[in-house]
Image 1 (cartoon, rainbow, N blue to C red):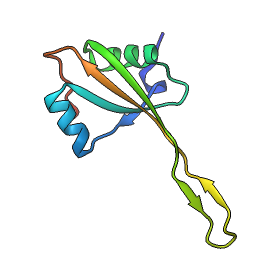
Image 2: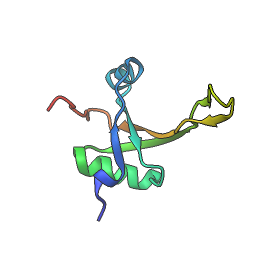
Image 3: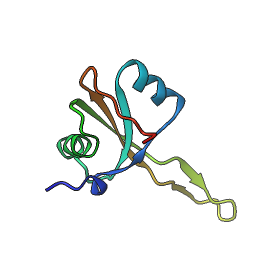
Length: 96
């Protein structure tokens, strides 16, 4: 049994994602690194009771950082995003 809280971390709300959700029916979520497309689809369908038609996954690499004292470089933490396309007519209401 899939637990949505073990797949989806949070919803990403930016100007771009707001336009995507209103015009294209696409919603963006930050997900755990071990999540797969099938598990993300099942979690969104279970949690929000909508029909998912497509799942796109993006692994963002963390930004490079430089230590001011030692000069050594490292990477910030990255994240995994999932862009969910819903069936036409379905919508997710985050205000409730």
